[in-house]
Image 1 (cartoon, rainbow, N blue to C red):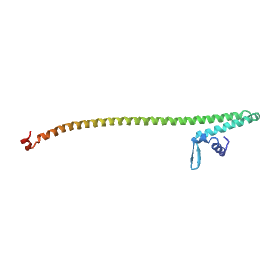
Image 2: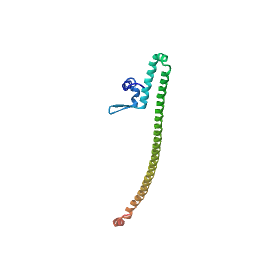
Image 3: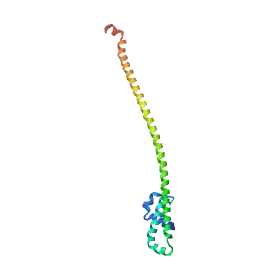
Image 4: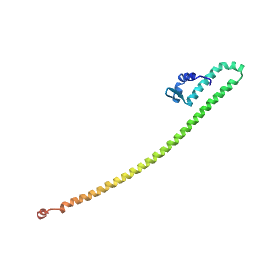
Length: 161
């Protein structure tokens, strides 16, 4: 683009900081820009070139012809193509993430179904155990009620009922 690193850094720290911040990270004091941030900065420089070029285009066209407009258009096309490529890459990543999430969701659904079936079986087993205890408890109560009558001592048999 014909600009220095300092110019890019100044533009980034100035008006583009809030726009580009989500697309940057710093490692060991070095600022790294993603393709999205690079595209935004390029677009900003091209926009400034066009606004500054509006005053000089008439002078340039007289001496050189329409070549600067073509090179600017080629630059814009290149920036737009880079943006499209970046967005397509991001879309592919998102598609993979969605596929992975769907697979995880299927696994979780299967695990939930198995857990529900296990819980239902445990409840049925518990209900059966309680019912058996109740039946056993009633039979035991009947036997306990009969035992005192059967185990009467000789004294009560002699003088009692």
